[in-house]
Length: 353
Ligand code: NAD
Ligand code: IPM
Ligand code: MN
Image (tube, rainbow, N blue to C red):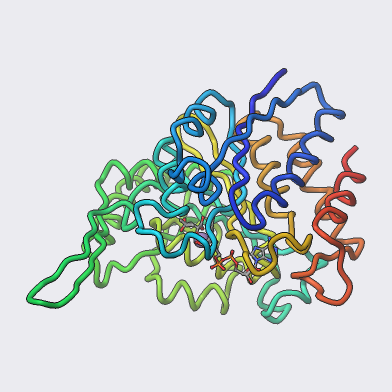
């Protein structure tokens, strides 16, 4: 079996962590009957520097002629002053839109061996196993926006807008996902203030009627941000909009010990896009300090969701777990006694058999 993977390394630590993902995939080739073909393309600042466009046509074509996409991260100081339409981050948003990946799955679980890395007390983090199901193609990220002069005052706005169709499809995703888990969905919104959130509640409740075996509850996002640190094990699937999902997933990452551990899969009806939840981490880029495990785990999600290679996905996840159990750490997890980006990847690969 041959699979084509579009590889978009991006900026900052993106290239370093993606290289680790590829090495792991190369090892998977050795223990299975799959063959990967990598097609490299540019995105973000890297693409701006080469094409004057953060998501060039060529990149789009390479992605669309692939079976899955692996992405590192985009962004950096060098491009921070560019107008918003041309920024590296806009390239990532255009990519997600172009692939029509509306469901962003961001799992967060606790590794027993990393209990001490969590800022939360052990009794609070026992049994934490959450998946954030984040809507990825709509909301304030894609709404109408403008910067204008109003009554002589500089003004800017970004519109949060959702329609029933967008909400229904992501809600179904969350309910289906929850059936493979603990059968609980928490819709996180701000329905006490926002009309868009009220529509989410209405539509999600309708969809819930078809999933009577799944428990549904509602929580305001401010409370959810609090409950995530107070009682994180009470969550199973968090269903939420684009921006709340972005913010809550970074928060959730800290429960597990580091943002460098959280992978993601962005899915729709067609191709899947796989990327760590973290950014380009300019502060540690090029120093072999980045934690590549989020990217390696994103590769496992690629095998699971795009290639139906559950066995191999589990082998990678188990290898990561073993490396952590055996006490290996990256800089973000132990700044005194750590392995480099490349070296910890080697440890993971050794355990893939
Ligand atoms: P960031 O996630 O890049 O970094 C936040 C902090 O976490 C930094 O201290 C960083 O060193 C650390 N960190 C992140 N990933 C790490 C890893 N794998 N290993 C060890 N430490 C890690 O967020 P930021 O600093 O807010 O943003 C930096 C740039 O990245 C910005 O340009 C931003 O727009 C962009 N960004 C891109 C993505 C993406 O491409 N998906 C996501 C978030 C931010
Ligand atoms: C993420 C990032 C992106 C987002 C940015 C870079 C557009 O923060 O993937 O979490 O907000 O979706
Ligand atoms: Mn984010």
